[in-house]
Image (cartoon, rainbow, N blue to C red; front, top):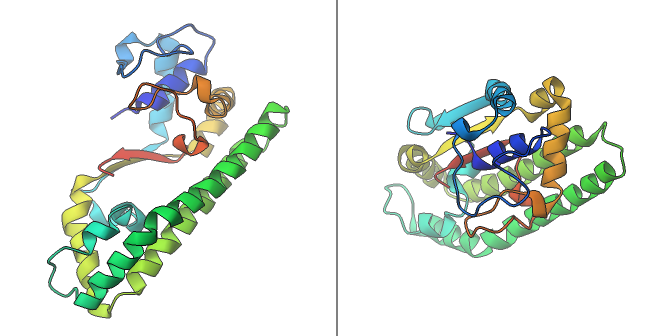
Length: 229
């Protein structure tokens, strides 16, 4: 599955007036057949740096945070043998603070991304890709630490029961594609910098589900995208 955002970014990364112009048609999904040959070549190179995880086939490769994200309240109500009443109360309690925690983590990442954009616009691009990847790594680490703290707050039996449920029931709903953006940047640095420039400019990003450009830097992720969340 190709990300519409990635397709638009790749089109804008070359000097063409292609299908993903500055104001793409709202909610339109562009076929790669509509994209110029130069862009298809970039897409092919991007594909080399992609890894697809299909949860139904490889549930153990999905991080705990992907399986638990924004599901804590719902998980507190499941009828899974091994989850005690106390375990469910703990999940419900974390569910009440989950949005606030994720918002805080995202705000830190957005602030850091803003600083990267300022640096990029100032002409100092050499470390921009490294800085973006470090930003995302920090965001992913903080998110993982939060969900790990949720899991370890449960009884040992509850931890086993919830982990089994996540792998057995939730994982099959998720397909995730990770992109080695650092590798892509090493192979096609100009296109990578162009993508980063677009990500720094909300007016040039692909429309979201409502047909309007994304407004938060966190909308643009350089490491992964997927379905089932």
